[in-house]
Length: 259
Image (tube, rainbow, N blue to C red; front, side, top):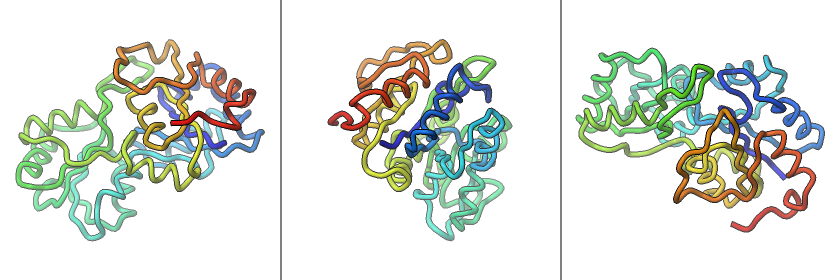
């Protein structure tokens, strides 16, 4: 049974592995289960994420799926696109054969993603382009982002700034739980499986979108939030290792829940 596994707050935090996480991936690899590391993180390039995983002892192979990659489904070849985002989005846009613009002038679309070197000038350029009619695409709408320094603003905070400045909401979202990234997961892993993550609003909703089981990981790195209205998990664990051990050892792995 395939597994779509979240990264931040599940496998690692600030690039440092959470307890038992590397062992959990080793168990899945040894059992021959198909894996994808599915993250709403869009700042880093796919190869950089794989390299960071290798640095903690996880062989990611070709199994990294990011919200930046999902942006490709929302732009068309030859379009002029301004990335108000990091290198991961720029890499995905270049692979999509669009014209990557240095600012929002003449943009057909603006893609907003989390990046730590954002500037007032570029925020202004993005808002002006959206106000002028450019399509407004977000890599994701996560309000916060867990780091070793603590919880920091996520992509959703940047998207909200552009929405307020431009006077209109985002047009499309690439990452979890939306169809753009769900279609990549299906193509990579098939039609049934488990999503393991720490956020019912994204990971749980992705499981619903896919029709898969949802294993919620709740740990000190991902404290409980108000989850009213979110997808209820089929399994709740305190770590990735605990979740994997339960799924590999139970009938759930063979049958999967009906959703």
